[in-house]
Image (cartoon, rainbow, N blue to C red; front, side, top):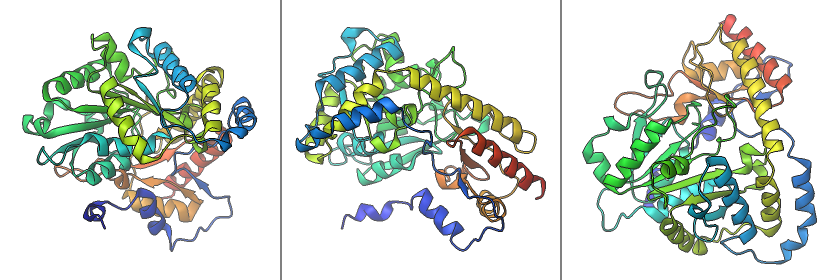
Length: 400
């Protein structure tokens, strides 16, 4: 077996299952999980209709590059969403469809990291983080380097605090904006600074933008990495890859449809890797994805729902929890009055509500675990269920 497998940490939900294994709820109210970030809103009807109409495509092998019409729909969306020039995004060179961004975020490390000729490679990631980043780094032969993001840093990474020796060893950095789980959004200044560092030290930026369409201020949507690169004159997107999907944007987590886009040479090499990976998207899913990327009405409705539920749950919990309203995404990241694992366990026993302990989403680095004594609340259920859960959590805290 690959010895690097032994370096992998248990996944957060494995730890959660172990934590709650012997716990029995003492309430008759229905169980509700706020632990998993899986949108529970029904998928748009027109997408399901498109999927059904294209089922005959199951009789054909899909190709790794995907349909040109899908890559064109993604390119058109990128150009419109991020105000890019049309000539800077070529669907033939700059876009690849993927089976959800999880597999692409993992596999990009396998394609990018050179552990044979460059000794002791580093993969940098913000801390807390999506554990796929760490797993990809470890199995590629790299060492993870964590950038702590705390309330004191406004949940943003301090790139200029990283030693030069670390940047010199860095081959890949993962950033997530809007961030999972903190909800922070990287501003123009930080993304442009990161691009400067990538130019200087020659590493790839993997920007996870899966929550890009869920945000609080309709007048200020989160900026994307390609957008900042374009505005700063990097119109061939050197060092840049962005990852996005339909899971959050369109409430289609089960479709497993996303894309990676960016620098043509990196995409070319990643495509070469993926032809061996065996991960082509089935044709019916591609056609359904085209329909989804070409429609914005359902995205606006989706965003409005999340804005309402976040605002209302925040209003209920803010008097009893130290919690910041997120700039993007659908998570709350409150501090807990007791240890986060004990909070999660006791909340499940008392209220049948599952939340994810923050320490499971982070690593102790430089003496700090940014997730310690925090929990992640995924507000992915309909408004009534989330609001009822918020009142139950408030009652639970009041009675602690």
